[in-house]
Image (cartoon, rainbow, N blue to C red):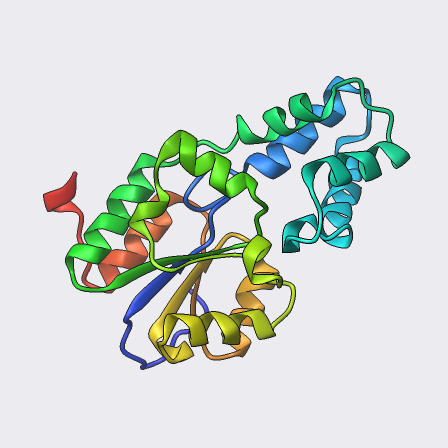
Length: 211
């Protein structure tokens, strides 16, 4: 637990991939690398930088733009739809996390999303029907800014309408956690559902009635 302070908690701000769902982007890229005889770590690093650099993650590009730029550096056998599918198929929603979100809301606190995502998040919601559990949904694709920029956390707090010290930000990326904590948000570095469950118990949120 980082960024802990005495502010009364009013809203939980969740990352999507790696927290609410399995991390499909990383897993998908690594599977694509293996299928194309590429070094997985190198491919993951470059493909991640490209999705930020090309603007797709901030709504200034498309999936076609993204895959075209990836292909400039790496020979890939699959077409764009197949490559996208390899990623989306690996974003598997975690039912236990949705149960925790519902328990949080039943105790009068809010639940929101802050995610560096593309319009893939909309596709995933049509498949899994989970975004209705959250308000607001702050997706970098529509915000035009990502969690790499500390100002994004201030903007998120402004949109939510809650001071940063009353927000608990949950993410599996230590860099995002550090930036959020530095701006006054309460933070939880997500490592597992059980670890997050213990964090909830510390805060008086139990799941007995929602199991």
